[in-house]
Amino acid sequence: MKNCAVGVFDSGIGGLALVNELNNLIPDENIIYIADKLHVTDLIKDKETVLKYAEKSIDFLQRHDVKMIISACGDVNTLFGVKPPETQTEYSGIFLPAAQAACGATKNNKVGIIGSSSIIKRGGYVKIIKNIKPGTLVTGVVCPLLSNIIESGLTGKESNSLRQAAEKYFTVLKQEKVDTVILADGNYVVIRNIISDILGDSVTLISPYEETAKHVYNCLLESDMLSDEGLPAQNTIYLTSDSDVYYRISPLFLKRKNTIFEKVDL
Image 1 (cartoon, rainbow, N blue to C red):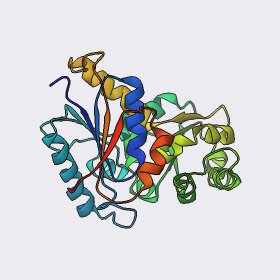
Image 2 (cartoon, one colour):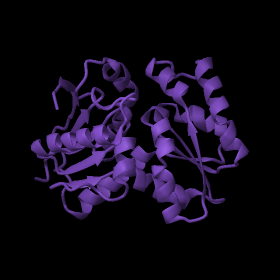
Image 3 (cartoon, rainbow, N blue to C red):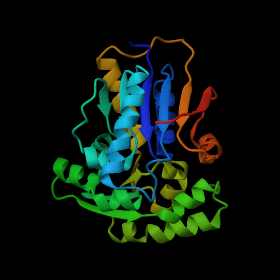
């Protein structure tokens, strides 16, 4: 069981950021990632649909005998909250590790969140942060154009449209004088240096994916479930849609060369 894979699921490409952090921190672990961009899209975000296909993704991963399941999907994390679903396998979301890190990092109790409209509007991060550290001012910013630009492949500092959009979106974070910002979308991890350059060195950037990878490592270590060292490890990414976005974008996220893609029906 200890040499079984770690399972990840998401409806967007944010899971790629988590897979990369897991590869970096626990390189001997096999990762199985179910990317369901077919059933849960930006246009289909109703609670029933999100939960239905979250349960299908969890069932899929359990059938592959994973030893831990992590949801990198913001909508699923919001709907589940900090209470995990009923599973036979240990489960973790990404909101709680990120919120704990942000609350520990902020010195002026002003935290910013940049993410999708559903993540910001549903307020999942806000509830957890205020539960951990009451009185914290949380400012959420929706940045749809950034994700579109990143997924089109324009991520270098030479991309004027990317930087201009980011500067516009982040104006409110500067006005509110936040000193800590959660990058609540995997896309933003790719442009972390640009975000840091715009917000300044005094602002701490929190990656939910990095913090969650640390949490996963600690869970596996404490339960003596880390895979044996030296065995070949790979990423297996199961896709539910025919979209080529994962093939185009994955090189921006993943450094592990041993990564395979397969089409699957949930």
